[in-house]
Image 1: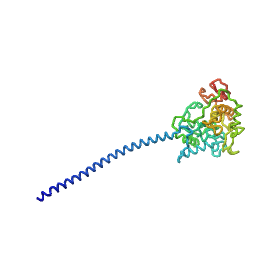
Image 2: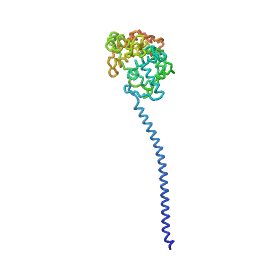
Image 3: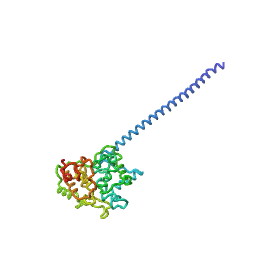
Image 4: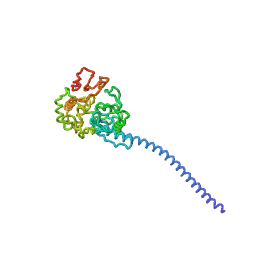
Length: 347
């Protein structure tokens, strides 16, 4: 009888035991499913994070890309060897005569005059429409009609040293060349490769359909230019008698100016530079001189004697690519040399 009474109790115990075991098994099953789901979710999350990071990086590149030179902001140099080299390049651009000029106290002479690269590439090569460096490393190598070949950035820099600086080439492997290229690369790091951006080069000029008026150019020079470049056009040194410090305002002609093979020796190139940048305070959006004034004063400036570039007759192997305002022979046409220098350029 007692055994009969215990049977329901035993049965209840077994049921409770099975229920507990079922709960444990169910809990383990849910835990395993949870782990599997979390692993799967974690994997997908990583993929999502990777995609978002790539999208954000692309957005960052697009948002940081320089589309207008006037919007450019100089980034700090990185604290590494590349940053140090780029910072040295900035010094060479802004203080060229101090480090590379004929009176420098630092080493070999590469510049034949006491101009700085920044005399033409204003604000250290960051001013719009003043032949800025921003984006150049994204454009080179590029075809050069003057060289008759696809030229590297280093070759373009050396073209400036031989012409605008009236000097000699920097060795490609030299610290100075590497520094200048590093500086240009730093300025160009947010510019997309292969395209030009607004503000590179020079402003457009509506070229007058006439020969330049040197008398009018002289008048413009006396009114707008002598306060900086002086009445004799020979510029104003930063320190009297210390030309290794360079010029506050560079000479426009004479022995210490660019030679006759330089880009500024071409009248239309000089006129475009002048219109967009001179006198100080002028800009592409707010020029001070008219096209006619810039045209005539450029001719007046280039009417004076300056150093002669050796072997410039070998420029432009394909003479059909020689600019109309290139003032020295040979030419692909029968137009007189004087017209190539002063216009009219309606040929």
